[in-house]
Every structure is written in structure tokens, then in C-alpha cells.
Image (cartoon, rainbow, N blue to C red; front, side, top):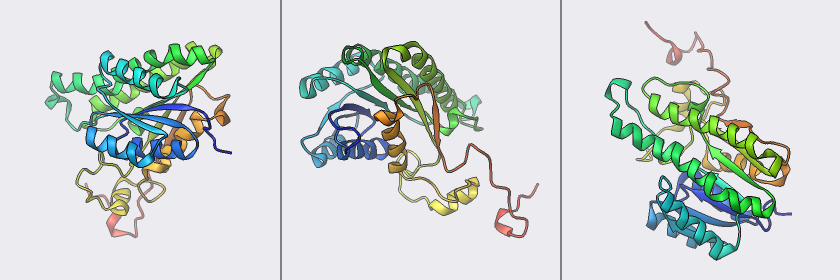
Length: 262
């Protein structure tokens, strides 16, 4: 049996990477999916390739007007909302001293305000159906800190905290809210030019699994949390990071490529 048969899912940041992989997987599992992104051409192409079970809506999810467009399109096309995957995000690599207020506002608008507005927007429709599932895509950076990424870290910790607060608020009303925390995943956000050597990067970062992850591996985590199989799971956080958040691999003193010199 398909795990999302009859469900309607909204997936943000779905024009490529993790969002695209999630949209394709959810459709394969029986869901009807609304893909939304600011990348209109790419998003339309993905939806068309999925077929009749998919629609694309170009929207800025950091704005209430953008969410109104997404909700209206979802209800018009499929009549209800069961699942929200808050996947859209932007990253940032700036030391604190170089971080501008404008850039900080932009990161928080997309990574925190957008998901919060999305949860607000879908809640009435989920409550009307007696329940639903929200999956917020945070990051391994929402479990620890990274030098030079304090703004991004702050946004992903905030999303982790919001997940727990909303989970507690709506648990008794049938709405589950959980967070997924990807590590180093092969997406355009990680590698815009498509030139990263995966094994070398995993080695450099000392990822326990010895490789970087693939978008579909994050999608499968979201699928589980969105499905009825996770019916008693809310307010939880699931790291999909090859063991990165568990700890760093200890360098092998006999391997010259892992030696650290002071």
C-alpha cells in the first residue's frame, strides 16, 4: 500500500534538491503535491514531469501574501491539506563581524518567518480535517554551532524550537510537528557548481558514514514523519547526517591525510 494514499502535501523549496526529491517521492507514495518555490521555470518543469498529481505555485514564502496564494491553489486543485514540508531555506557563510543587518533579516525571513507563516496558514485546514503532519527541515546546524555561520545556525535553532512549541500546542488536536536535521547533502545549496568531490568532502568533515548524503535520503525521513506510521511522534528531531552530529571521526595517526598540524 502506498504510504500517503489520498493525502495532499505542500512542499516548499521544491524546484530542486531536497524539495524536488521529496515531491517526487511523495507523489510516488500516493500523495497529491503542491510544489512552491521562487524558481518558476525549474518548479514548473518538476511538477510537469511528476504529472497530474502535482501542481506548481510560484510564491515568496517569507510573505503572508505568498502563503495565501499557495493555500488557495492547494484548495482549488485538491480540496484540502494534510501535510506541510517546510523545506525552503537559504544559507550564509559570514563571520559575525561581516554580517549585515539586511542579510540577517533575509535569512530569518526565509528560514524562520516563512515556516512560521506556513504553519499558521495550514493549521485551520488541518484542524478542519481532524489532523495533519508538519515537517520542518532544520539542519545539523540546528543541533550545534559552526564558525562563520552564526546567522544560519540561529535560524535553524529557531526552527527547531518553533517545532517543539507548535507540537505541544496542537498535539491533542491531531496535528504532529517534527523537525528533520540534514547534514551534508548533495544539493545546489551545498554545491552550486556541481563540482564537489563527495568522498573528499566527507573525509575533510570527518563524517562518520564516510560520504555525503543524497536528497532522497532526507526525503525518506520526511516521508516517515508525514505518514501514519509516525502517528505517535511529535516534537521530535531526526538527524539525517551520517552520524555527523553524533561526533567527529578520530583521525588515524597512520594516515597522513588526516593529520592536523598546529
